[in-house]
Amino acid sequence: MQRLLFTWSFVLCACSGSTPAPGPDAAGPAPRTFGAACGSASTNAPDCDSHVCTDTIDMAGHPVCSQQCTLLNAKDPSCPNGSKGMFCNMRGYCRP
Image (cartoon, rainbow, N blue to C red; front, side, top):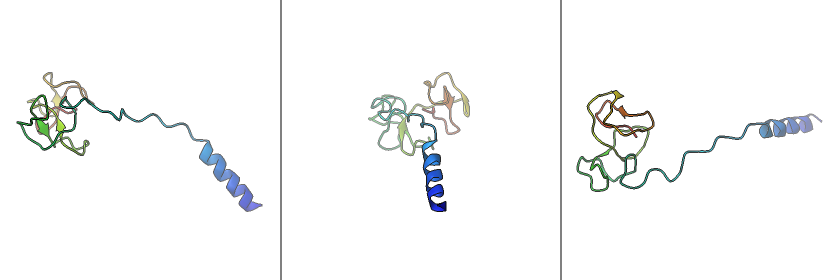
């Protein structure tokens, strides 16, 4: 009887959770645009419209198309709007 109660309590707990939120858009940004994946870090990258491919965006896990900026660790009006707004990281690149 205890096993039956344990099993039912497990089933009820497993089924009572809320539905998870949908994940981010799997398609991501269009190729060559701000935030799109690119080959290797360079300021003359042919696979980015801005010609800037950086690996300084830690959360991306791969190089992304970006652009250089000067207002380090702050909002920079020259940056396109990204996940943190128009943000320039500490290494001088706009954060997608």
